[in-house]
Length: 229
Image 1: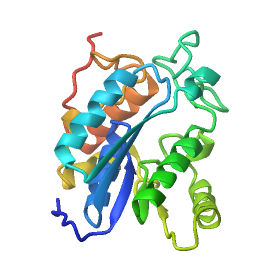
Image 2: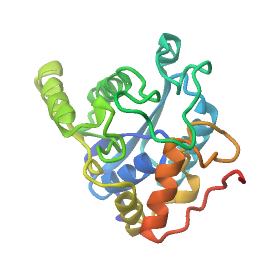
Image 3: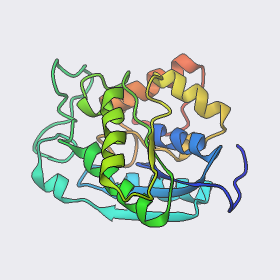
């Protein structure tokens, strides 16, 4: 990966600790110095995601780090990611319509917080690892959503602020993301994607299955541990 210098422009990267956000950070690093943003929003695996975020931060060495508490999203409920009474779908495709793992308005709230921080620290870009192919049922993974958000940023920030929202993975499938990550030499072993577990990845939730399929199609071994059977 290209080395950064203090003179480079600054980009905020939303880093969940997952594969996609890791690759998005590597893309951003090619042209920007980095500021890493992570949110705890009451997700089941928040402890494991926070650990992955911190380990990725140690690898990428961003200029700035921010961890924010958005636990009210979990308190609102409405998602199997944040409500333990609602099971994570395993070994099956999500039914038509909104997936149970959709967290209502989450991306909008996370991006808004990241943009606010970007405005404070003088960053010129915000990167998010969203992609429309892996989550066609999610309303906040569509290109037109991010186009609209860029308009909102223009309208809702100060006159001297010029921040652009970047979605470098938006048209890639998981295999394409893995290939790009391999090209950029990302630390796949530090990432965490499982919706269900915090010790060994379950291999059965939709996130694990997409990840495993992507690595297989890309011809790359997934280095994280999975539960047996």
